[in-house]
Length: 218
Ligand SMILES: N[C@@H](CCC(=O)N[C@@H](CS)C(=O)NCC(=O)O)C(=O)O
Image 1 (cartoon, rainbow, N blue to C red):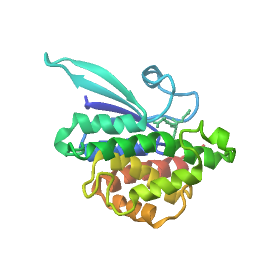
Image 2: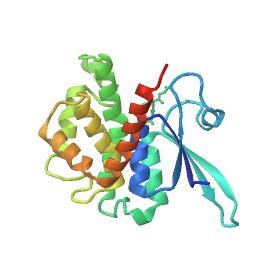
Image 3: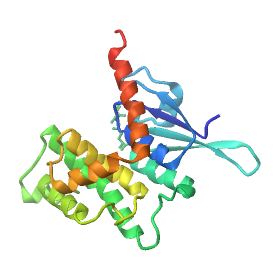
Image 4: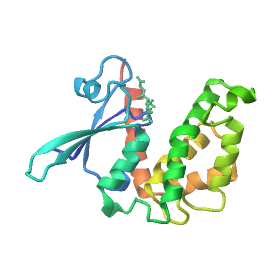
């Protein structure tokens, strides 16, 4: 049995987790899950939210048996894999932790919410309402993200860490799907990350699966 069961759909945020699995060098089996009600029982049991990605870690105990840990949320999956595979050197060092956690959580909360609400066309210019929004306003969020990414190659400076898989996925998607403005800082960062062998490998798997399902009859 592979160490991880990875429930995903190739056209989903599962792409983030697959990239993380490949960066970590993890041994996983994929379980493809469709959008809609017809989903494997084990998936629904593991994640009642029925959201992909969902990762089940078949963790080896000291006595040789295994027990399962379920991890959901793309950001949590990324960091969990970095912790489980320290040899892949994806965790932050002592002086990198502040940037690592700050950017990671900023992307998983404010960036995600701002981009989705903006894409849906939900916004408010009312300052009284903006104080309640974790991202304030889309424009302020974009300016802040741009400032954060200017003058550095990666989240933690000059070294790639797992935070770049998550923050970078937002930059890549933002540029590719026009949900972020085409600022130099976003484009340069996204292009740098797209050259990583683990990204190329993982992306190809999802692109091939998407092409297969698009050409499947029915
Ligand atoms: N907060 C979750 C969101 C995951 C999510 O919304 N995934 C979408 C695809 S991108 C999904 O599973 N949709 C299926 C559904 O809601 O039925 C994460 O960051 O992993």
